[in-house]
Image (cartoon, rainbow, N blue to C red):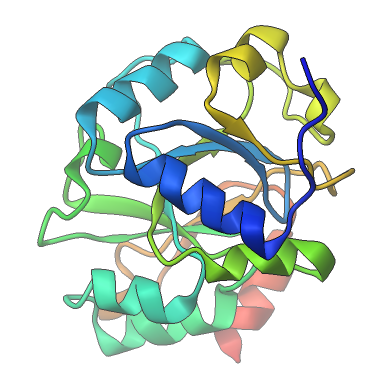
Length: 210
């Protein structure tokens, strides 16, 4: 296996092209290494899930590389929910939001009316990924139940050999994103931590209080 290229604007463009033609990519984010593909391609999504040995009925997140792209993709979101997303993202958070339009149905699993969304913070050389205009269906680059990968070489070899493109972002923080359920937030202001990760519950509360 040859050395993976580091993240540059040219490599980000190659990632976008790879996803556009149905490929599965291995890339660095602001937390751990992830796998990504076109969220509208059933063949690509099924292939990503096979690489992870993950049940196809489990939901995945959709990653956007800018807040504007997320806002355009989910026009039904209410004003209060959008404000919460503005406080939490970009950053190492996956926000679960209402999805009444049932957009990105391949990512929703058994609950297509809910959707996990990510906008990563991309410091340093990872900032080149902000040029990727299209969203990715995204999941961590590990076999189901396995450890998250902080470095590219930590990714399971079978996963690495099964992707079409991999990018090397060096050593990452290593903690997965914190998953915050904003389902009732529009109506009640209530939210819930479904998985604590890179951002603690106290910090989430602070951000949402403004």
